[in-house]
Image 1 (cartoon, rainbow, N blue to C red):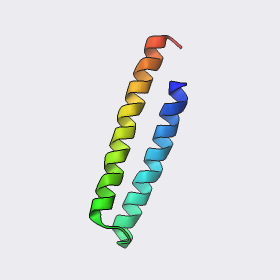
Image 2 (image 1 turned 180 degrees about the vertical axis):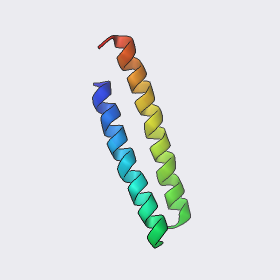
Image 3 (image 1 turned 90 degrees about the horizontal axis):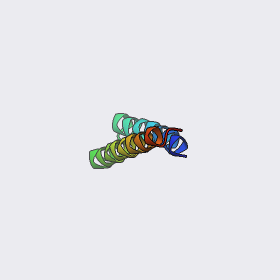
Image 4 (image 1 turned 45 degrees about the vertical axis):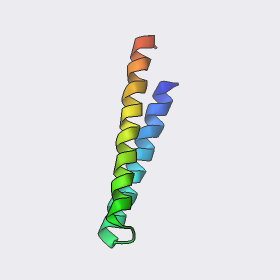
Amino acid sequence: MSLVIGHLSLVICHWLFVIGYLSFVIGCLSLVVCHWLLVICHLLFVVWELGMGNWYKDGC
């Protein structure tokens, strides 16, 4: 289950980064919004790391 969560986190993180980068390039969103998208991305990586850690501990 945590492997699925980790994969979804990476997919969501990828799209948040793409949205943040494109909005920065074309100027549709403010830098503050881009910053928060990257913060969310970082938090998803933390969740993924915790999930993978639990996955390895479970021995699955």
